[in-house]
Image 1 (tube, rainbow, N blue to C red):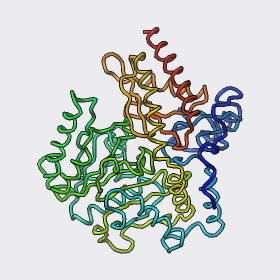
Image 2: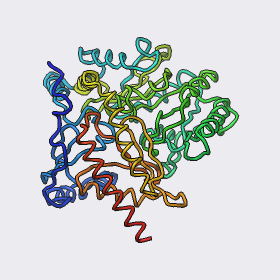
Image 3: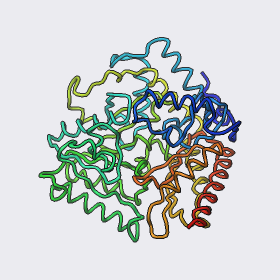
Length: 461
């Protein structure tokens, strides 16, 4: 089967096509019906009140016929585009044969294991084991916690302030969002958090890095963080996505790898949002040239949004036995087929380079906007994971500005998302197949909206 169509031919349109108010009548009806029957945990339609009918490439069509440019990719899931035919067709073929195999071997499963092995960072290729346990990234985090504790015999675990690793109890324990998890305590015991090296909080990136590394050394040696002994592992996002698209200073992961090795503590890199080409490399770890002890992956590895996650770790850590980590859906073969085809598609069309090039364009446009918009205080990111931070003249977060930007962008046919505990960071993470024309049109819309929202705020002030 040819690896086709090319990225330029995947989309419904190169620009938004709106036929009426948003939400339209059919969307409004479905939103009301959902609100009547589904739990209050539903979140995304509160900010983006549309009901989706279909999606292709970097475009979404709602049930009222409105077509949007998608700069969120399902929060980093649709890296090769929504409904990519090359991925979808083979997943359909697998679905016709068999979908659920628990962990019995299939040719499709072995092919996917080989594909993941081939793109693993550092020295992990041909020196790794892969554990499937559940359909979402948080399941992979849970597996990595068990892996670290089992191999070290120690109970302590360490995460970073403002880090986010998922919604299950172990993942929540690692996450550094107190407001997100405070209602569900007590969580896991023996958990410490250290500050993530945010250059915005220090005079220089070097100061930010050294402050964090000093805390890490203290905690890993058992001298701080409330732990009685060195922990089993430390979990780190190469870029904090949900936490505000925080890009650490150069050398952070390299130093972390050296420190953890010196203290015999496992370094687990959470690549759930940053993986599968999002940052311009297969994994963000590749930018640093390091080899994690373990790595969690999810989101985009299911190809076109099929639920799948995995924990990839050094082969010598494969000391546990059968059913030490299990899950009913660790045999989702259509998702594995889709993941393999997505890897092939990314490679065929050099989407790693495309992510780098398109991401640079989006950041350049935002930095041009920053020159005239005083409340846009920082633009940061890597590849197609980009954040734009909005604060007032005193440095206070402006979540209401970002919320207005998101709402008005939707009214103009552009889907964008947010980040940060305070919700004051605009997050852009479009599919890697975004075309140059779509990037230009989307940024034109975003520029107009940001200028309008910030000018209105300054006038009212």
